[in-house]
Image (cartoon, rainbow, N blue to C red; front, side, top):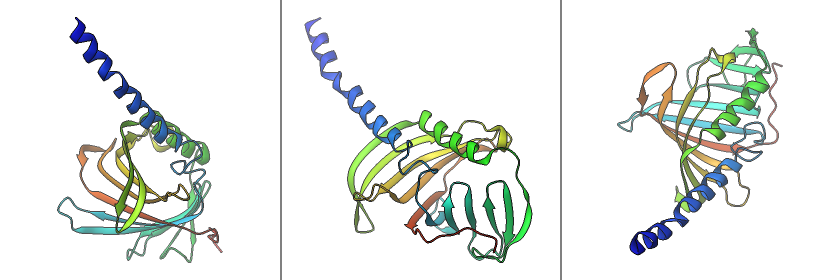
Length: 209
């Protein structure tokens, strides 16, 4: 019995450490860099790689807020811009834009629920401290999460295994890597690797003009 108690007491700090890391990542969803409603204006370049490492395609995003974005696949000639419920289509990230209809539901509330559900569904959290990526030092976190089904999106949901690299000075995510993708519309886990690089730019304006 004595040996059992010593072993049990030795293990006690481990859950506390795990909980602290979970809470540290969860806090990033509360007005931090993982809260899309609070993230500053920015550009994103997202490269999508097949499991064999070959580049499949590259997205670009122009983001003024969670509900004001323009995005598309580079070279596709098919881009979409959204401002609240309204959408436009165009051949490039800068248009020119043509109205393409309205979305239903409260888009801002839907986006906020995505953040809330991802925070609630956090699992396998790892706080890796400072690590290097492309020769730069970043504060690094790894976690798995997913959204809850959304009525606004036809009860769809999605998730992935995420690794994020934060600027240690600003606390903003600079590189975001996702793999092991799951979704309500996909019967199997997808192993593509998404590598997203963010560049912050307060001059960004999303407008059909």
